[in-house]
Image 1: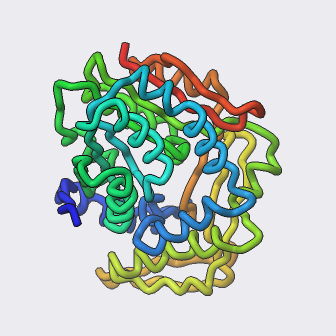
Image 2: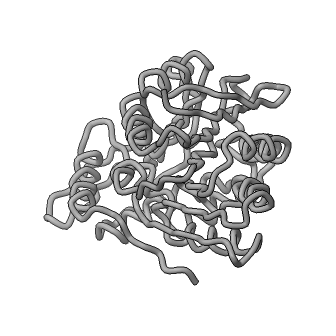
Length: 320
């Protein structure tokens, strides 16, 4: 197994601890989305991607299958660098295609989940065991500045519409941070979920098998373990609905009853019956909105790939 290099900032980790306690004590309670993706969370998300309702993965997979050859021909990378890789099943289409053109292709992955990185390693090795693989454990928001610069062309990947988990401020911070590490010959492939019929979007986050419910509740186990808390997942129910004003899915844990959560400093968090804890947003973009974000980050769309229904878009992007 390839060694995983931890590039996480110790100062950022301490800040994360303070932030989570603050966000839980706030009147509008929330838990940062990154805590959804521990080892179990990553496995559950893989299962979500295979549900009938979750169209995003299928459509993105189709777009990669039908356009991988053109994408690697245009970008011609010597390194494919992925943010938040999951298991990299979709990414192997690009790596495999480019390996045929350049056997010296390398693959790099930055993910907060050690389990996801291990899954990534196994998937990429199936293509060819000669491919150099670099695995980095860290947060692609706070640790992006640590990405090693190389002189040869690189293709950055941010798939799964993960950008939709960020509000405008954080999305711009990520995109401008990426712009700083991109060279003129580099490309950036961005996967974006587009606005569509509300019922289709809502169903994707309320699957009939209840996997998303388990995935959402697992975040409580993650913060319990990490910060020595005592959330009882049975005190909460999964709730996900579309906020049409903000064009985003909002995923919550809604409290079934009034109770308190003790913190390590002996203070406590009061949670009222019916009170909600936000765990994730998933924005659905219009082309106008995403183009504005890219323009503000000094990035431009070189080419876009869409399915016939225009449910989803892959954008091949360069720096201005």
